[in-house]
Length: 155
Image 1: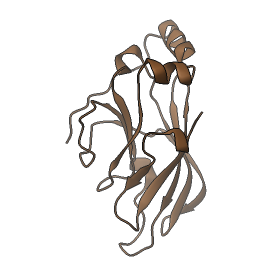
Image 2: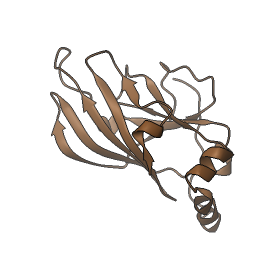
Image 3: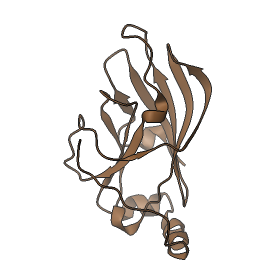
Image 4: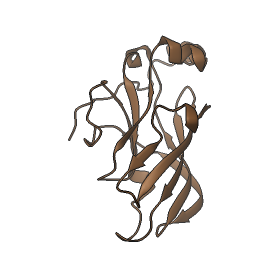
């Protein structure tokens, strides 16, 4: 588990009144779970649907306002699901960190359009060791059919 205060960035923002705070991130062999707290004040209408959010593996110089080709959530659960003002819960993304990820950033972008990308973390050996991710790589070797690559061009 990576607490929010240890993430490189933890806000995916539309504007000052609509923003998503990433509370924490859990990494398992087959998924990444992102815990979110999305808020909006209804000044622009309802909050965007959280299930349109994505994660993506990108190069260091990827622009924060671009929408990368990424992975959308395949499961979500919310303790608060009020489309007018707040979503509080988690989003699961079917993704495995692999050796191909080293040297890249994992980003999260809330909603379908207009939110900035939040760099969750830079994947390097220090990060892998700090969060004891080596066992994940070992488990992936036993299951080579699992998809581990992203395309990282913007749309």
